[in-house]
Length: 186
Image 1 (spheres, rainbow, N blue to C red):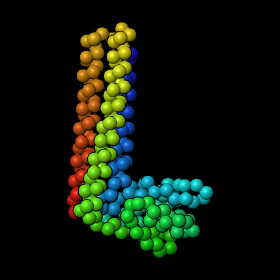
Image 2 (cartoon, one colour; image 1 turned 90 degrees about the vertical axis):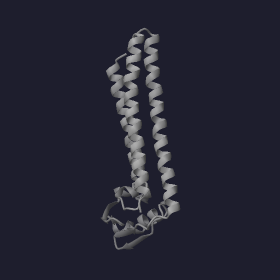
Image 3 (cartoon, rainbow, N blue to C red; image 1 turned 180 degrees about the vertical axis):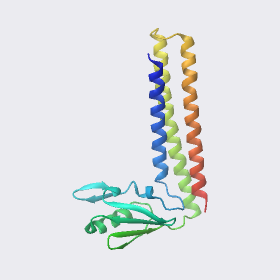
Image 4 (cartoon, rainbow, N blue to C red; image 1 turned 45 degrees about the horizontal axis):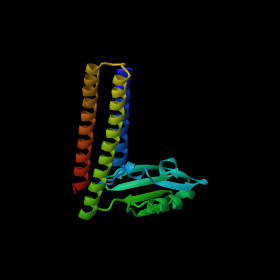
């Protein structure tokens, strides 16, 4: 068993988990406009469902407005319908090939719902990391059973790997706390 490879693989998998969490948080709406808010919107054009960013440019002219510039003006009504049906609670206004989305202020109740969703995303990230940790620790235990490493090495490796998971867990907690603060700020 090559410990350095195992540790590098562990760090890569946990970094990917953090990245997935960041993407999930980017799609959660706070009181401000964000171009990532529309990342999950898919538009039925050209015979298939395409991500919105492949048929239009999304920008934020100010903190409360999103501007979606559709490249092919004939697709504007389809893009508008996709945004309206996305479940984000946005009401698009179309003027030619440009769709404007004003961010309505979030109600207290909606803010609380969004903090619960953010908490759920953070918990899913932690579960994913626990599964990665269990897999890695199992590999280390198997290496001891197969007499590839000593029990002293096992304890040293497990402590070292645990430090990686402790750091990533703290990172998830900090991200969740920051996202909750963003959502709850008026």
